[in-house]
Length: 115
Image (cartoon, rainbow, N blue to C red; front, side):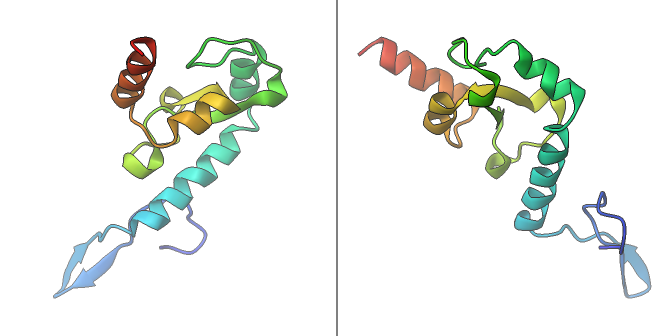
């Protein structure tokens, strides 16, 4: 990775006189995405998002301090720390959701309703 350029997720190398861009390890990409999420947590956009105090998943009303940032599509399954993928969640829902994809979460909720 180029020194001082943390935004780049690819490294430029030369192989047999040709340039190529090998992907960094999954761990490196996940760490970069976590760093982006931490930076977004300190923005006016995120403060506005949690100011309503609503959990994205259960719709419950919570104190701002009780809400966490959740990736709808988990980093472990290819999600990114982009605004469209980040939602406020109560700690209970975030712990239950773990690394489920949105469709898997919906199936989980339906199974609870049908029990």
